[in-house]
Structure formats: C-alpha cells, structure tokens
Picture 1 (cartoon, rainbow, N blue to C red):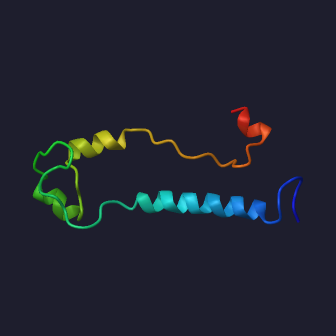
Picture 2: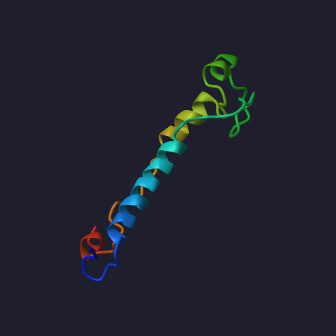
Length: 89
C-alpha cells in the first residue's frame, strides 16, 4: 500500500537504506585490521611495540589517534523523503 505519491514499497526501501547506512557505519568503526605499522602513517614517528601488540593492525601513534578521535564526524539524517519537516532543520 503506497502513501500519497509514493510507490508501493517506498517506505520499506527507506527503512532498508537507513539500516544499511548504519551497518556500514558500524563496520567502519571495527578498528584496525591487518598488520601493524612500525611507524605512524601520519607523522612517521615510531609506534611503540606494546601498542602494536595490544592493537593488531594499528596504523597511527597514540598522539595522532587521539587527534583523529577528537574530530567530529557528521552522520547522515534519518528522514530521506525530502518532506517539509526535513527542510526546516
């Protein structure tokens, strides 16, 4: 059953897209994978051996990682319909 001008299944498509976006966001947060680097990918300072053992796949030194963690990353909105309510924000 469609609502208004929407085609059948449009609401379910919006729900599926929102779920897929959130799953992709969570998969990206899994953390480092692969082999650890010996030197930071950003500043090229040596990464401590204890850090490489504790976090397999680490690519950044502690200072660079803390700097990245402090950066705000905006998430996509939930309302995908372009309705008047979403345009008021």
